[in-house]
Length: 332
Ligand code: SF4
Image (tube, rainbow, N blue to C red; front, side, top):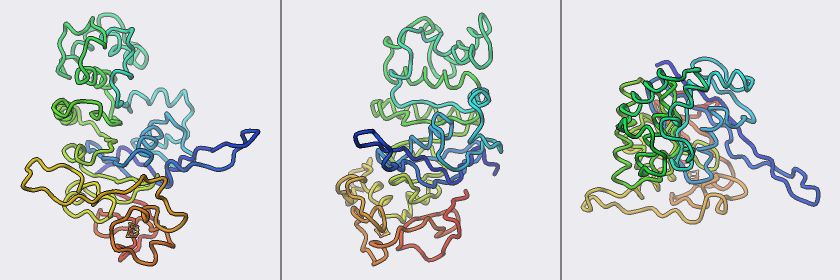
């Protein structure tokens, strides 16, 4: 299947400064050698705790952040180092929807103006034509024509997120980065927004990267899921494989924490102790300080590479190093 987005060896390091003259002393490796592909019309979930690098990857993919190293190919074109002006023209193809709808909508603009703004900027569309397009988009996301002249504060969280989705759709994007689009919403509203996103993907042949800290949420929308831990992918596979046969102890722990709708199916939860950064050992596997699996000597001395354990299933854990993988890269 043709990939729409290819990320190869992506690194994003932030300089850490300290001392009297605020000099650069080290680097914080927010994203450290991450590779994946997202085929056209499919959804990849990027899942991890805060500090795992998932949002940084999303921002690098649309060049809101400059990658330190690595390549980002969009529809076959290397966009990793496109000049800002050229990148601006590509922005209509790649849109981002944010976690907090209220914060991402300008409170002094009407809903009509908010949704029309990308049309003015990217397509130089104005007047009657833009107004008609906004009305059409309101309908597409389940809002009404009378909402056109209202302001964001008059809407519920779910409605505000629908406005954010309409704004992103305005310029007919091919790829949408969804950065925790439902985490600020009530559970009942979350399901409605997820259904809407699913419907829009089918109707407009959209490709999604779905960023979330909640593995349970990505289950219904994603085709493939990548688990991120301290800036690296530790497991990536189809959503079915991740949920039915997770191999990395971190993935197993996250799955065990998902509440079951039926209390009869209640499984034992694997508790994750501490947080990723403070529990990180000086050497060996970055997850060793929190791992529940019976460890082997290599866990304490060598960082496990991401390797293929089955077709399309990659894991970074010494317990699964049966087939070595030459590059550590993932190719969907
Ligand atoms: Fe746990 Fe060792 Fe696997 Fe790391 S490599 S996840 S410490 S078993």
